[in-house]
Length: 377
Image 1: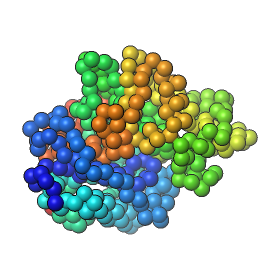
Image 2: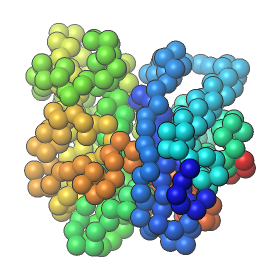
Image 3: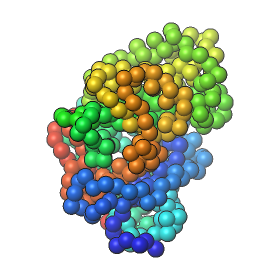
Image 4: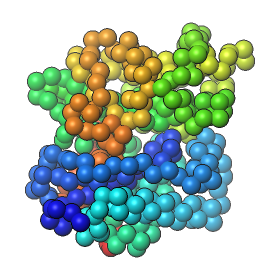
């Protein structure tokens, strides 16, 4: 059992663009609800593997614009909800905690589609919160993105508000770089407005290309990319994608940056390892160019997400941003593998406290909004 009063921790759950696992983070804040800037402490974090057939289905849906029947959407919603509930219960067991130790679960779910443009903008995350609440006996806050979209925003990225609450420093201009399936930047000026936006692909394309050509789910330590050389003409064709030149606020996902998009840019003569090296360079270049265009005085880039563990990518990023120190969020007390999951624990806390979870300057929403919906235990 816990050695702290009941209800003092929150459990964040998220499966990102790469659908490489369900990240779970048990987080305790230094108070319950009184302060938005309470310092978080990670009590326990773990990535729970998807059941292989379900993951394969999610990855396929992310890579290809397939039509789904209503029955298929409904069944996926429930199956993902059960997977998230199982991850939550396993995390509690491993931490030696029970339901009464947790004030709420913040569940992001799995994004099925993200289309914040058009006549009827929408974003859709699956993972039935009723199932999670029923199985865990804990209140669940879920469906965080749609209120921001309803208010005219992109519904993404949402993590910059958490970055601002935990990593801002009044003595220097900083940026937080999340290297998940998609890369996104949070700009934390010493003084001024916090901004944030997606910069383009990070691990998602590299993972998919690696899976296609090696059978491995990801490029461990950048070994596959290290076997190749950057193809300059291919990189130029990829960087010519108009989305990169669009001004923030902006967000994207696997429905834009997928293998069909890569295939359309290929000349047909590239070696697979050269393409992998070029995709890695695409991430570094697009991040570097985005930072120079939006906060050229950045002195420190704090990196988190799975890409932190790819030394080749981190070296390429350092080369692309030579004027800034690049370091892991671990240096600042935040485990890089669980920053996003911690953020959704924080967003659940914000919801219960009746505080906004979005930053309008980041998402483009009409104003601050309390995000998510509460599903009682």
